[in-house]
Image (cartoon, rainbow, N blue to C red):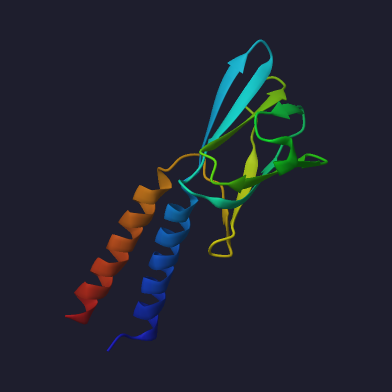
Length: 140
């Protein structure tokens, strides 16, 4: 029988794996003469929204995303996504912007942080494996 502590460890591990794998968002930057091009690679078939918080010192100039799927509110850009493979937008400013973002997946009604790269998947899988090994070792 699984004790409460073991149940919680399993639940936390599953939540880490689910949230990180669901994100699948990679943000990359390219630079040209004071402009910063931000490209978001999206999960295949994504339906939902992305909110990107632009840090002070940077100005939003525009996007390649359809204009009827973009809303700028102060320093936050909202993108509606319906199956696109990526979103690219342009900022003006110096250096690499510390952008924070969120993804809202409408298919599962979950909101997850936008990751800078898919590398956290490996960390989550490692943490889940470690939790399961600890539980298995104690139950013997």
